[in-house]
Amino acid sequence: MVHTQRVVYPHTHTIAEAGAQRILLAILDGLNGRPEAEWFDLALTGGSDTLKALQYMADNPLADAIDWSRVRIWWADERFVAADDDDRNAFEARRLLLDHLVSAGMLPEANIHEMGSDTRSPAAVAAADDAADEALLDEAARAYERELVEALGPEPAMDLLVLGMGPDGHYASLFPGHPQIGERERLVVGVDHSPKLPPLRLSMTAPLMARSRRTWVLTAGSGKAEALARALAEPNNPATPASFATGTEECIWFTEPCAAAGVPETGTAH
Image 1: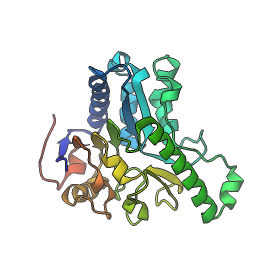
Image 2: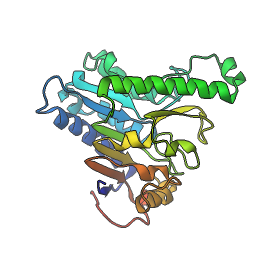
Image 3: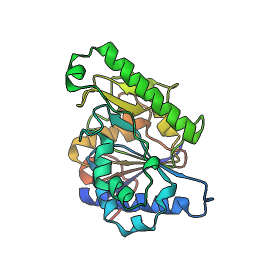
Image 4: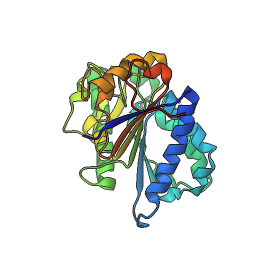
């Protein structure tokens, strides 16, 4: 198992700024020296800390130095709502960064691999029962699994996975007390009755995310302090799904003093 590191920045905004710089450098360095035919695969989630980092990436001159035609964008989780719903992680990522890269001719639209969206009318969504929701979620999850395998092979792995963590210790859309955290056979699962709205979601599974070469978790705020302490103290604890976060080469938690309160010192940035 890769040793988990923690880096504490002095302010919340610094996490997003540093995260943006680090992500762009990881892509730039990752592509450097690789054969032209090889890709850099980046997986994102939503969450305030990750979205702030994307916003900083859009204004960073390093973005212009990257050959985005060789970068594929994936999602570790998604809210199963309409494609143009601003609750969607992909919708926000496009608004903050990806649409700019596409319109500038830097990132091909085909390189953006979104999870499925809910194409039903609001009335149909409201009228659906659990069985109908579960069937749609499973269909969308299996479609994304096929997309991953087609692009990355039978055991897909990201080059970089950027995550957040909720105050309850969830990561991606794997929540405490929900069975999806224990799934070991699937790559992607549907999540219904999410304790955090919207209730229908899709998520990569813990084993798939653990295959990422590098995993970074951006988390800030005193409301996440208890969950962060648990995640770092008790690896692979289903009661704190984020404790499963790891990578094959590197796993780093980027945080700030309020969130890191009560966690033993392992690394500090100023």
